[in-house]
Amino acid sequence: MRRTKKIKVNHNSEFELDLAPLLAVMVKLVPVLLVSSAFVQMMVIESELPQVVNEAIQRQEQQPTVTNVAVEVVAKEGFHIVITEKGKDVVETVPLKDGAFDYATLHQKLVAVKKAHPDVFKIELSPDGAVPYNDVVKVMDEARQARDTNTKFPVYDTKQGKNVETNYMFPEIVFANMMEG
Image (cartoon, rainbow, N blue to C red; front, side, top):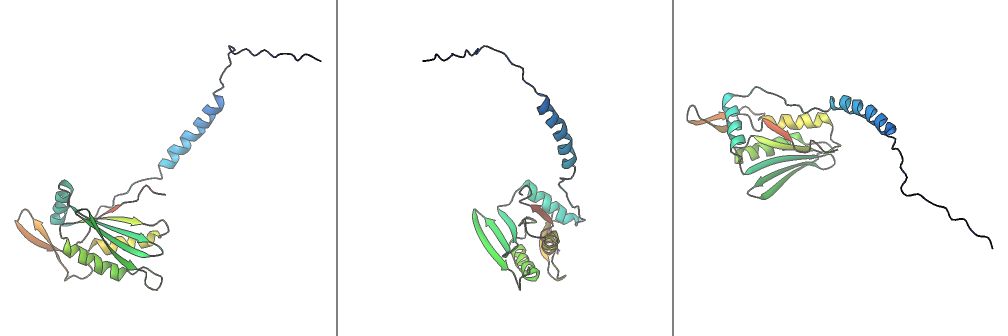
């Protein structure tokens, strides 16, 4: 029988770590991230609102109301208006009409929500990823103010000390799912 040679392994040996490939990847990755971050922006659309409505929005931000209104836009189902009040959710749905979004019914439901909650000026908009941008803008237009000039909503004016009327419903629209895919 032959004797097998025993291989000696030196566990105390040192080696050099080559960081050049890692640095090459980082040098290429950093400019790509910097350039792509210029395209990701959060936009705020400033609109001219009456002073009374601006003051009401500021009061709402300082003293958060217990009522939260959200509109979910689902491409294959329609609209879901979620009203959260005192921890309870009330969901009203506006289904698709002939395969398209029913903006007239959405507007009527939002007018009813505003009449029930005149102190709320902000809604959260959650569009589905499959909803075209054009439809999202139409939803924002339907929620911003009443179409009928005879439809008015009370707003408390602190300077006059009384309620005044405006046709603005939800001028402050916040995207609730901004960071989703």
